[in-house]
Image (tube, rainbow, N blue to C red):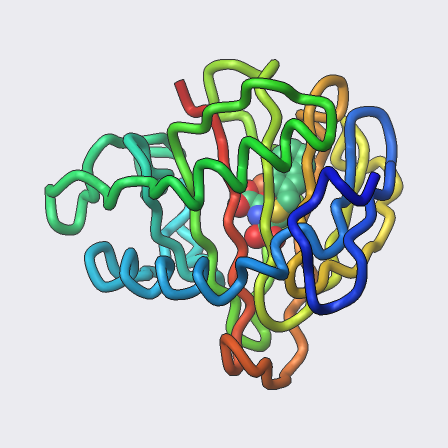
Length: 216
Ligand code: MD3
Ligand code: FE
């Protein structure tokens, strides 16, 4: 299994199967974390992080930006993918080769060959920020997986079932972890508990999560 992963100086990466088509690749992104973080900083200089408003009128505690040919957006008119950053009316920053190859290598390591995302949503959590239980269903093709990369402060991830009321399991996501979801688990409810205060040597007092999607 080890040769599926880039080498890491923070312990051996390993794959944990969490359910049907759900795979946690511990430490898969650790070796590239610094390069990833630099790219994320440059993306946020072009398309700034912002607190989006949900269709119901709530301001999200998470701050969001995107790169790729599609970016995720939300306001009173609904959740959707858009080709331009509505704040600047310019295209989102492009998805670099480093980001693309990380996403497709992680998908392949979890059994999804040939994943080519067109959207990378970047979520910034400062201590106290959270994401309520939800499903990701604004993408056109649910056969493509979602690849999620965690950097910086740890978070407790909630993963539920296909109904909002299904029981939820809790799982710690650490710096460098990559979670891949697809197949029959693609539409499971999930969320993130409020991030605890802390300091991380790369990101400071924040958690960054990248989710790679095929928005279509
Ligand atoms: C399970 N982000 O941006 S990533 C999101 O940590 C989102 O920022 C969380 O949920 C975060 O929509 C969780 C893990 C994840 C992402 C997408 C999924 C899990 C998923 C889609 C379907 C099922
Ligand atoms: Fe989600």
